Length: 307
Image (tube, rainbow, N blue to C red):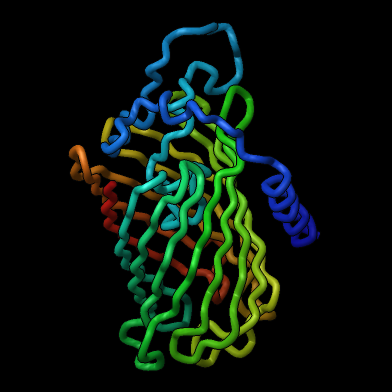
């Protein structure tokens, strides 16, 4: 019953993201507090510079300016639940390096390295190329890593009582050792500001898993889904913390759903007129003790963006 309801909820996000058109706004760039060629700090991304207008609205986040609602706060797909604002804007590049470690019951520890590059084509649309290297220390996977192509679009910007709504498509290509066929997944994300510092996020996905992710992945579930909420809070002008929960189907047939609690932090380490650097750290804590659910996971990322 829970699986059916969860699948319906995730499907609903998919429909919403398709029917909600992006708001055409030719003056959007002129309204941004961010200079045309300068990345913003986390604090600037959340600063409600527009003090005018009525303050009688009781809706969450009603006192925030338009630019504060729309600016990205670095809550990317590195985390289990990301924000709906795009990671890069028109003409902006970003590169990311990740290290991931997971330990599971009665299994060998898993260590992964991931590299990715993003480029923004519009204020709402960007594409990403990601490479997942073979597992370290296992000896089973060799050669080239698995390549993923991601296309992200923000369909609706946050305004008044309306949250930001975005979606992105992921394609896994069979370039890694032992992989086969192409996987396709659609993710839908909703973000709503509650106060200047506090936001809530919700993400769900549907995936058609058509082949093997690695050698020996023979019993893979062909249809997968997942969904979960998250909150993020800006502690100061350089530091953001977050808590996420996700419930998703297992990768293998016959296994229990995966339930994860995630605790994360983002820290800005450098910013000037052209570049911006951040480090991100997260802990994944398994909540169900099932075989596929990590007992504990640790993730670290360094990112650099420029225009």
